[in-house]
Image (cartoon, rainbow, N blue to C red):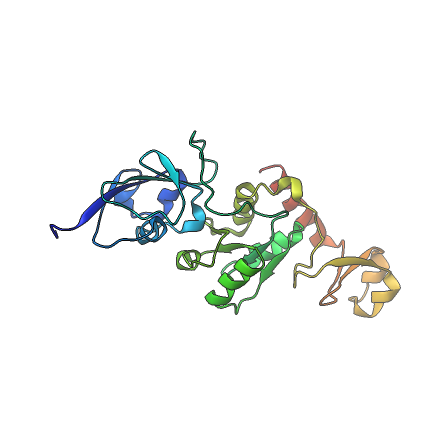
Length: 250
């Protein structure tokens, strides 16, 4: 070990341990360093992306991401809803208004589900990481991803690593994480392209309907962007059941 190296200790609370190697989880990490660095960069070098952190306490006082780590610092990082009685130093501005999202290429079905619940959700399967980070920053969208490296990009202010792999459990996870239940407005956005849906008369979409559909259904909505037409067919009840499960926390 370099005798001139410095060291600081890091402890990660609760859900932040997800990002650590198993041998370092739920314990104090003695971190040796030889350079001056911000606490954001040093925490991320240990594996934890900055958008997942809500509070950082150094030697008993809250600091922001620009704090320069000093030899002997005792650092504790906390996730959201930590319940710690320390006067917080905001790490990012409060999220402005109704949640809006942008998702990476691994989360296409989750994007459709969030649109189904009525949330403005951008998704393309050809987004590059640079574009995801830039749009998230410029449009103040919450970046949802299965790529830890993407979350570490400095442009990302609001973001979350989706832990679940099952699609419906992913939706429940995000609903809990961002307290979406009371903000659900079902069938407000097109599940295909994210455009807004509006009511249309049957006659206006008759030429877009499969054979027999107009005979059994009278209520239709159409996307203002891609013109996809929606009606309350058998798929509607399945979606409504999923919405009810999410709202009721099942």
